[in-house]
Amino acid sequence: MNNIVYFEIQSSDLSRDIHFYQTVFGWKFTQVEGLPIEYYQIETENMSGGLLKRPAGIPPIHCGTNAYTCSVLVENFDETSKKILQAGGQVAMAKFAIPGRCWQGYFLDLDQNTFGLVEADEKAQ
Figure 1: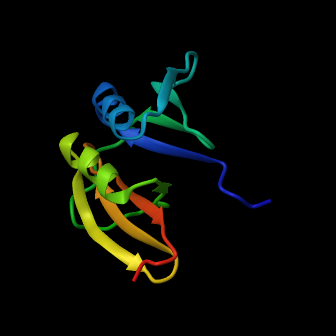
Figure 2 (figure 1 turned 135 degrees about the vertical axis):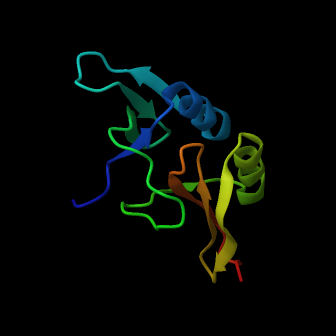
Figure 3 (figure 1 turned 60 degrees about the horizontal axis):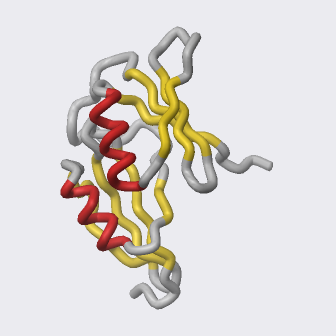
């Protein structure tokens, strides 16, 4: 109980951002018809989410995140970071160690949404 089971990403350019997340993480997107907003179901290996048309303007840069920030568990932080940058994403907070647990870092997608990467590594220092 009380586990996060679903996530949503807001987007001002749905096709661009679908391409970004497909390229970086291999997620699958299916449009959901009959909703009052343009919406795509996201299927990942172990969690479902949604990508929706942003209902308001993009918040200004450098004003902080006003939402939960989700982090994606990846096999190789550095390889995934390269994919993010090649797909047009940006580093929000460079890779750092959580000693004895993992490598962590944060990025911005093409719509300025913040998300994290985590690579489990008990030897991280």
